[in-house]
Image 1 (cartoon, rainbow, N blue to C red):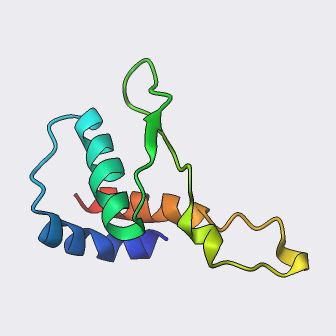
Image 2: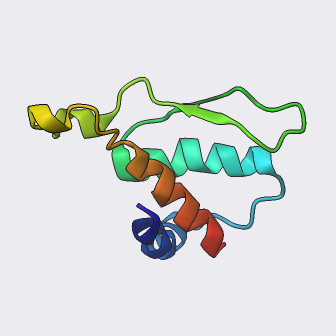
Image 3: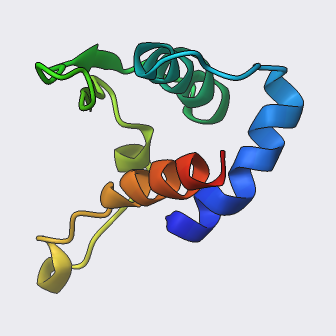
Length: 95
């Protein structure tokens, strides 16, 4: 996921015309309301802000990845949605 994010951020910035975020809450809003909507067609909820305002959770009510994934029985514990964490990390490290 990390390498996807490293490459995807350029496409996102070109297509969205989003300017520089002024704080972390604005960054969370852009990720949830624009980026997820643009690439996955969903808008996750932003919850669980830390007291310092430097951590939050994105809650996906509907995960489009589960619609297209079939895991063999011997890999049933694979947490493939962690791909999204890598995408976010890669994209955010580039900006």
